[in-house]
Amino acid sequence: MMTVRAYAAQRAGTTLEAWAYDPPPLAPFEAEIAVTHCGLCHSDVHIIKGDWGESFPAVPGHEVVGEVVAVGSAADPALLGQRVGVGWQAGACLACEFCLRGEENMCVRARPSCFEGHFGGFAQRFRADSRFCHPIPAGMRSVEAAPLLCAGITVYAPLKRYARAGHWRVGVVGIGGLGHLALKFARALGAEVTAFTTSASKADEAKALGAHHVVMTGEASALRRARASLDLLLVTVNAALDWFSYAKTLRPNGVLCFVGAADNNVDIPVGVILSKQWTVTGSSIGGRADMRDMFALAALHGITPQVEALPMSQVNTAIQRLLANDVRYRFVLTWDEPA
Ligand code: NAP
Ligand code: ZN
Image 1: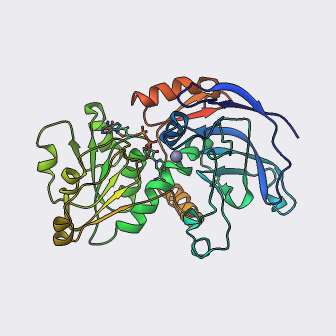
Image 2: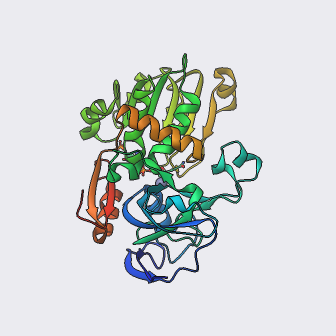
Image 3: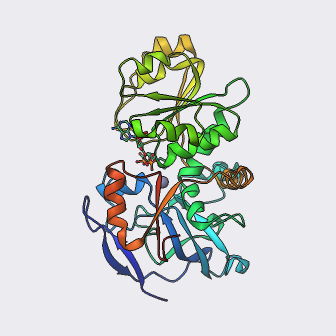
């Protein structure tokens, strides 16, 4: 048993400080990972700010990659020495109807990786149920695998669910950690892809990432010009926008799907929803089968996030720059030299 060195927020809204904790004995199905890389997701910032309630001290980090160094008595010993990754979900009951359907993310006993008393990957060691330790395809660099574990699965799952033949015109609102991967996955799945961004400097980059079209949302009438053009609009922003204006970019039978934790309510007249047959929905990470599927597709098509690696000691710099929308497109913190 070793004391775990970590970076923690002791109270809401504070910077992370070096901290250490002594973990309890390893539970039967748990695995302990020596962390090498951990992505910084905007959900970590929500946790640090206390947006989702009090859970302090908070050790954020839920795009964890590393090597399994210990397993509990019931876990598969073959995991020892393996390179694995864990995303937002670190456990589930594995017996309820949702788990049995491969929708472990809908399990009422879903265990988060770095929230509600669980300590995350901005640490030298991290623990999860071994059955949520996902193998990483050989040949995929750890620094690029990390963001797939949350940002990747979160955009892949709704694209798989809603983008399909005859329903393949996909818009992505917000080209950040999630959004830039959404452009890549949507393109690989055969969609006609439209990026919606507030950042003029991202317009050309969005096309290089896979967008056929770019809508600069800061320009008056930009949304109006995109009216009735999309089958799926995937919203990755955490801001409070006028969702009816965005919904008007949908064609009949279109789907407005939120993955970003937008900070307001959706106010769309029911009469329009019913006459256009729009679906207004959300999506939360993805199940284990979708995670495997996502990694396989990423490996097949060479879909990798664009990352900036920083040493773990610079985690506060990464957080400040993420808050300032100053990252292309995902920070990954490492314990080694930046890869
Ligand atoms: P991120 O890297 O900060 O990206 C968010 C993007 O939203 C920014 O890059 C920016 O894109 C756009 N944006 C930011 N502020 C905006 C504003 N005021 N108005 C309009 N657009 C704005 O964040 P992320 O890591 O991708 O996470 C995004 C959200 O998804 C967070 O709320 C996070 O908690 C949530 N999330 C949800 C799940 C899930 O399971 N559903 C999983 C992971 C994360 P442009 O520069 O292109 O405008
Ligand atoms: Zn996340």
